Image (spheres, helix red, strand yellow):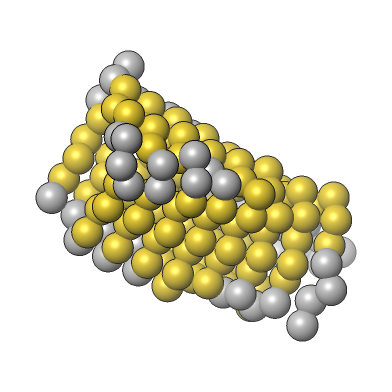
Length: 171
């Protein structure tokens, strides 16, 4: 199925929200208790307010707005965008890729404890721009992939890739 919330619209669901093999496109405000997204596409351009947990499985999640939940878990999917995630914990077991498209520089902000058991993929360009992840707390266990989007780079270049307040012991 397909659920589309247009700009200036609001939907509050009093039971758990399940999206199965469809599209969830939000330009308004979506509120609920729990959100489960399985083998689907979830595009957020405005605001999602979930009082408990968000669980995505094999899902493309594109956030250019603000998503708030107690806990967010990504399992075998991809998170892209330039938005903000607000949660106590964001657990990545898929792929995080800032930017709205492949090879386009972007910043994703996690106002939470970001736990990476998956892959973080960051683009670098030759004009000293790069993808950026901003988080309060970081546990980096998975992989970090650097993707050059330009063909020529100068020596002695530096890039800020991940900005964090606290880092936990990584394994």
